[in-house]
Length: 230
Length: 266
Image: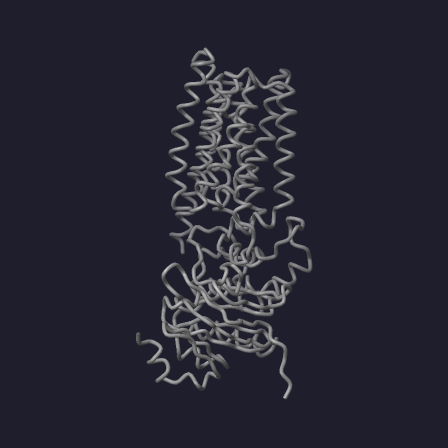
């Protein structure tokens, strides 16, 4: 058996906010093409962990290790898009193409946006203002925006939490397709255990007592029940 | 009317202002900074008064005050929830200072009116050159940071998540805004400046849905307002600011009504 090199490693990672430990001695190895669910009750520190991975927060102890050239796409839980928001879905997706470049998108960049819009099923509504799109369409557009930079690692931070069951499945089917067809590595942050079981191969569970991880089959009801009790 | 040099200068200045306000206005609207823009214009009034008091040109005083205060406001109100209160406090302070400096400079009320409401007759060819240089500077910086500024303005969360230098961008934008305010104050006056920096862009967002499109339409709306304002003012001898304000406000209300019927039709 060959072990593929890790795309992301957490070594003895610990985070303590003043007077309040969030997680401690967390070790994790994520290999290319894996689909992980990061589960745990609300408020247990899942988003803190993601922000630490993104180097937006400095861990109290330990290290987050990945190649600096690794492209990470992150789809956050909240976004400020009201009904008046003017940009079309296509323009919103293209916002992520930054750099010291000309104001207008190059032909290659426009093709990239078109390809992502097609993959995420947003092609037909690409010219609609995103403010007028449905919750599911918006979430797809957020996903598309993260994907437009061709990330190798995608982090979905409770991205499905506000969606109805059908839309949730639709979005995750799409992520699963990208995972299987294009080898996209996925960290899916959720408190929805059935959804985690349906889509991921591995889990990392954060609880106030500590962390547990393993193949998704090992995420038993008993573990979930224990993890959710304080 | 173009046989008079001051009218030619006014049209040249007005055109520059319309272009810069159309472009900057789109970012002002996207960043929800209408109120801050208003404050910067009051600070501009205070700076102009200080300039007169110190024996400089009003523009120099304005540039000094708006640039320094935009950096302070930026530092004070990085957190959005504090922005309104911090902005009000600074605005009150600067209006007070403006009146103090005017009184210290021993200038009469008509001078204050000129600063507050702008004047067409006062614009010389060298003023136009000065405005052109400042505007080109602003536009060049916008051009260089355009993609970052666009991302941060239209999707602050996304830009933060990506790890863009959002605080530095925010302060850079405020300085650019301060420069634009100082430029535009020359013709419409400091109190009415926020008209050109907010209304054309706010109107445009109801009709077009790309950043470039909004800029284009905002420039056109600002140009129509400034040009017809100047012409009407020339013919009627009423203040140019009144006409510009009325025209831009009319465009905005038309946009709101249009939007209302669009939504109702769905």
